Image (cartoon, rainbow over all chains, first blue to last red):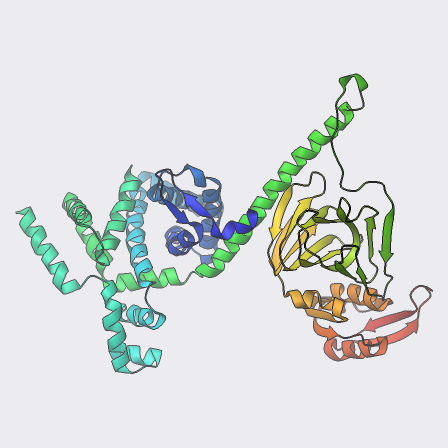
Length: 189
Length: 340
């Protein structure tokens, strides 16, 4: 019934399904950030993504799988952003530039790679307890342990413990990545 | 499909960064890195700690819980609008069928079965300044607020439990799955199986409200009885008669129904609404000399004070001056004048 909107499941044609609420929480911030690549102003981005979620709801029976749904989001968000720019008349410059410049025309596709990659990291980091998540974000921003301890008002040893635990979410950089590239070079030669 | 490939590539890189990629995905990633030297620099940029932190901070700048609530509200309204559109279609068909029925040789049989038949009605009314509590033949209890009329027909509990309401009432309904109870109030109808809820439907008000305390009620359209919304406990549905919209919001149900226990509770209520309710509650007339008063909001609980106490409370909380005069209207003995 209508009252059960919150628990709705989106069923894809390939038989998989996803809860609307989970889908929203996992992807909304990434979609809004994607809109932010084209238009400025957080509330503008929020409204654009909200609108696309509504049309997603209306077309929810038509998607083959999760990737097709995401493709719908990226395409619709990009189009809505360009429409928005058109209304602001800033578009003239941007659009003419876009038409003549194949690099810029294709660049939004690379933005999709970036957003998708970081969105996945985001979903993994969201599984961490709150304090570990905070420590990790500061550490990733290249803050020292002392700086983190001061910012969060915790002991340096606590920072170390949290950091050690939190970093399990990411691939161990020096080890595996190095191996990867060694392998990659051998594979090449 | 270029865009599909980009999405898949992006998510494989994300899985790689978090150490979750499958061997197959690892192989595809290597292939992709070979395709173009630019891919390698894109890939390295994505693994950079600072870039990861910047992306996640940007994601965090959006309040996804708040935006989710906003989305749910928008979906509910969208669904209600769709339902209302369907009703309009139903109403048109109904009228055409009705006209056709007049022509005898077409022999169109109507089975409309309206909920309210012309029968003997029991009617209970309260005047301004009065509250009352009645017990219906099925032992359901109804509290009536000021200036409220409730009526039910002689077949109540035999074949139906249909109630007509003008004004505001709070219901505690005895469960009976076989004979559901209907409250008809203007354009909306409430279907009840057994539950506690509050209905406010004054004919002079622009909107009718239904607030649910426990159990569940359905809001139906008055014309064809189709379901429009199933109300959850703690939710209030406000039906605006002018633009025919139903708005759902969460309310503090105890405050909302405090009137039945002899209290009037206002929670950030706009003054025009407050004064309207006070007029009904105390059976007084309130004249506002300074329109700035309308821009005030009030937080207060009134427990059956007399009019003088009421005015003092208003003076204290809203810093307005007052005068109590006898009124010219014999039905409304007291007139209060508010001025800054």
